[in-house]
Image (tube, rainbow, N blue to C red; front, side, top):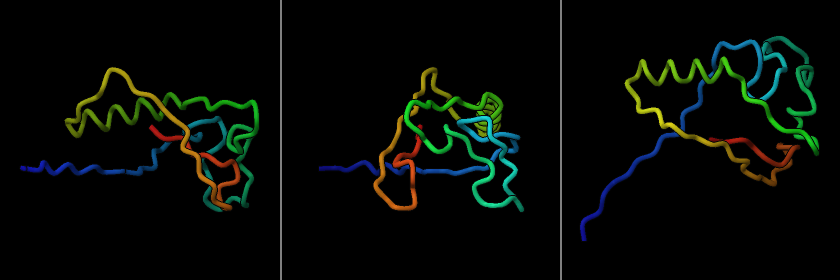
Length: 95
């Protein structure tokens, strides 16, 4: 039986935006005291929902076009639940 090798990449990038990906808190963390740029959305408090950073999406699409990538017409984000003591809100948003 022949097998097809499928390789997936998880790529992390830091975009030059003023705010974070899923809230309006400042992304200028260099030299800032710990936990200074946080809000209820960052902390994942009950009843809060993430709001996507429009500029970050534009930058991501521009990068994909520059790399000649295929951009799907539809994409969605999910919450990945973790039960680690260092992830206080208990989930991570992933695409």
